[in-house]
Amino acid sequence: MQAKPGPAHPERRRSDLPWKTPKPGHEDPSAPGLVAAILDSPEYRLADQDVEFLSHDGTRGLRLHLDYMKAEKLLEAAGIAHTIVVFGGTRIPEPKAALKRAEEIEAALNAKPDDEGLKKSLRIAQRIVAKSHYYDVARDFGRTVGHAEGSEGNCLVVATGGGPGMMEAANRGARDVGARTVGLNISLPHEQYPNPYLTPGLCFRFHYFAVRKLHFLLRARALVVFPGGYGTLDELFETLTLIQTRKIAPVPVILVGRAYWSRAFDPDFLVEEGVIDPEDRELFWYAETAEEIWDDIRRWYDRAGKPLTGGTTGREEDAG
Image (tube, rainbow, N blue to C red; front, side):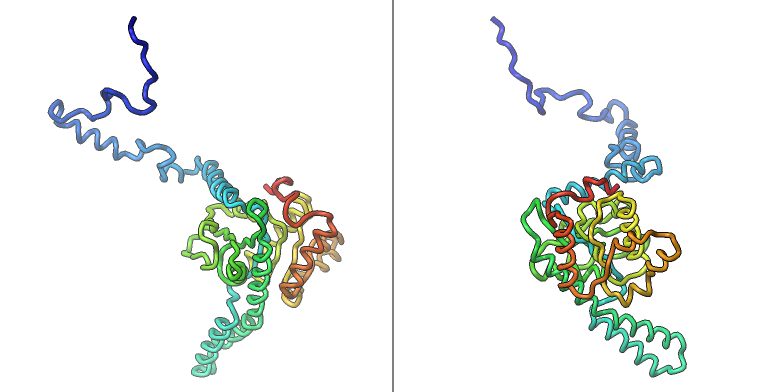
């Protein structure tokens, strides 16, 4: 009886298929050059390896999906379940750096005492020095959250935009105590670098602001906002709008530095003008120290009857 064949090898063959080698030059001298031209053509590349193709307008949907999925899968793999999101100005450095810059401008002004541009620069630099103590507050707060990191899969970490200033300070504080810390960078037309205190493997760079914003809120358990400019205001107002409309479940929103925020943003005026409701004014409050911020967050969750870690997050309420 003829033996029945066994299963074929899943990868190897005993004999090569005809197309394993290109048409040889001895059969047609032009064949090798023609094949090389085909192989070098961008149209011959696999679609997922063709960066030029993926950059077309028509593939924007794929890029959006990839922008979302890369960070999502890596955060899941790292066991990052919850975040305390910290925003704030990139132009507010640590106190010694702020003071050094002000002293340099003052020295330049002493050499040119009538220079109006230097006078203005010195006034601004002095205001930055006055705000630079918030760097220490943000760093202290990062340490506090870092101590509360928790176990993998139920992990609470500091998440920032990954830039300098207030974000650097919060990431740095978490790193001070050996905790992991997340940065969500964005690709911009001008060169930029992440701050050095982010955990390698937990700093992501996004192409789309919308996807970056989504990742900020999917795991957010609180939003802590230090003095800042347009970018800080953008994230603050978007978060308040999502909570106001209940597009996401409410989370604590804390503005650090009443003296700054009372001038930058006047919610009482908006209530008086009838463009927001009184209850919308209650979606945030002010704090001054790292201890106060942390106590306020924990108190908010106690009053809400929810755990700070575990339970409902923006993911269930569809932050997107």
